[in-house]
Image (cartoon, rainbow, N blue to C red; front, side, top):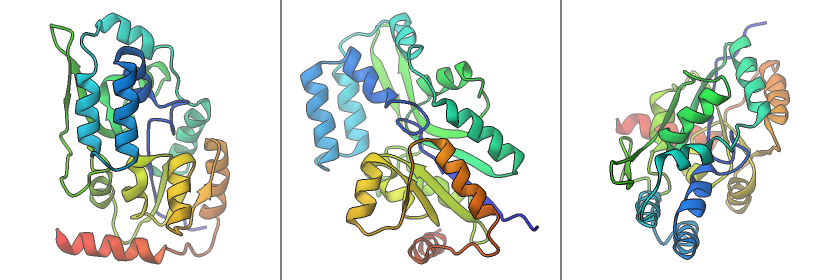
Amino acid sequence: MKRRKIKVFVDFDGTITLEDVGEAIFRRFGNAEQVKRIIEDLLSDKISSRQCWDELCDSVNFINKYELDEFIDLLDVDPSFIQFVKFCNQNEIEMVVLSDGFDYYIDRLFNKAGLAGLKYYSNKLFVDSKGILKAEYPYFDVDSPTSANCKKNHIINHSSEDDYTIYIGDGNSDKEAAQYCDFIFAKDGLARFCSMERISFYPFNNFIDIQNKITELVNKKNLRKRHQAQLKRKSAYMAE
C-alpha cells in the first residue's frame, strides 16, 4: 500500500496538556479579577491574543522562578499524546506542535514527558532578575489577531499542495489555523466555532480517538481534501 503524505499540526495548551497551562499559571500567580476579565475580553474578541498575553504578564506583580517551576511540574501532558507521538514516528507522519503559549513551560513539560526535541513553534517567556514576566512574539502577524504565534503561517510554511494536512485543537488560537487544513480534530471552543461556522470536524476526547481515526484515513485509497482549505492555502501560496 502506498503511504499517503500526511502532516499533522497540533495545539499545545488544553490539547496536548490535560489543562491550559498558560491560563493556569496566570490564575495562580496573577490578580484573579484582572485575569478573569482579560480572558473574557480575549474570548469576546475585544482584544488580540498578543494583547491578552501582555496584559496577563502585567497582572503578575512579582513571580518567584522556583515557585513557577514547581507549579509547572504539577501539570502534565496527556499520556495518550505520548503514545500518539510514537504512532506518528512509526508511520512516518510528520508532526509539528503549534502553540500560542510559551516555550518556558513547553520545554519543561516535554522534558518531563520524555519528549524533548519534539518540533514546536511558540511565543517566548522570560522571568527577569526582578521577578517580572516578559513575553516575546517571534512569529507574530498583525493579520492574525487570534494567535500571537501565527499558526496559519507555520502551516503554510510546512506543507504543500501535495500534502494532506490535519489539525488538532481545542480553542480560540486554533480558529484561523484549522481552516487551512484538510481534516480537523476539534473539542471545546474549537468544536463550538466549527459548528457555528459549519466547518466539518471530527470530535475527540483524547489522542486515542485521533490515532484510531488517522489509522482509518491512512488506509483509505483516496484522501479527499477539504475544498475550502484548498482555496485558503492556494490564496496564501499566491500571496507569498
